[in-house]
Image (cartoon, rainbow, N blue to C red; front, side, top):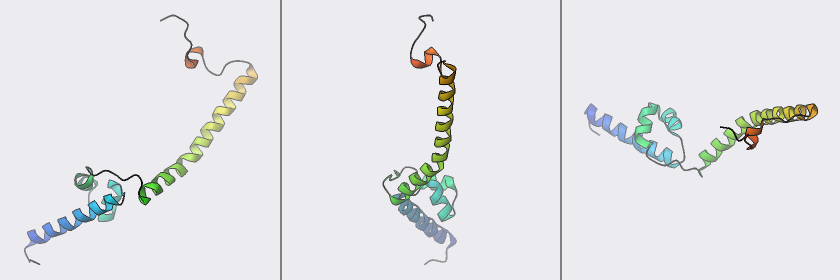
Length: 109
């Protein structure tokens, strides 16, 4: 290996670039690559942003499962509130929404 700092820097950059491309091929996101290699997110994006993210990789599957786990409580809460509103509307004998939300129009513009 050369003692020239510019050659060492170039070799280090090439090593990081290959590692970034390998991580992307494993299905890692730009942010995960930047964190793991301790480089700027903009640098990671410049190096691997053009490479497609493999949605079938183990990392992608884990991200989807984690995202679904985060969303599930919010969806359940929203569903419960909607069902409660529908029950209250039914008890009052009125419709839950106005006619235009059900696809009807009054014929006026």
